[in-house]
Length: 216
View 1: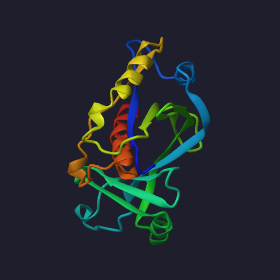
View 2: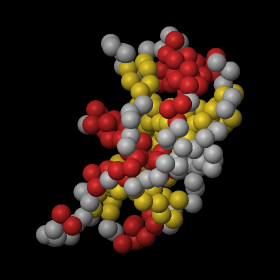
View 3: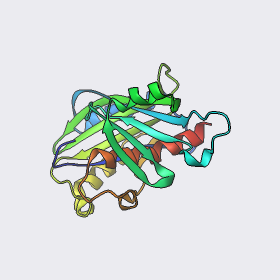
View 4: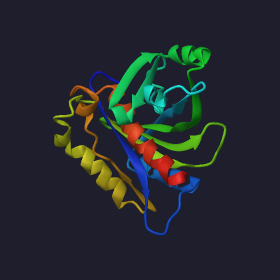
């Protein structure tokens, strides 16, 4: 993520009577292009839900029951661990994944890719992508990242009227859905006002938890 940028992660919300399908993703991408979004390439983030590998009668309370591991394309050498219930978010070197595998301390319960296309739209980067299990095309959801490139402070983010204008413009298109941004209280995770990739992971943790609840 740029030093001077702030990012919102939005989740697809279906309109009444509609269901999720790949055609919706195409329509959303076409919508971004119709408001002069310039395609700059592809993107992919990977998220893994980990569970502890307990031996015999070990005290389960000593281990987090589940945490989200995140690999972001924008930070290829980093690995993020989010424990939402304990309000913790950690940034580690990507090699921690190999260490966990060798120690056999945690196993992957399931993993998801968020992948799609990146667009430049004035002072914004917009990423539109599908949420699918790894090695599967079973569509779980659609996400949109909106990154504003001129500020990095959450305290002043509410002043960015162009963010609301962009959401409103997308809302006027004939899409069978709309995108919802859930307010996230970063301070409870010990995060500062300046936007970082950890802020992005916390937003994804909330969105993916909702998706997994709906699909289980």
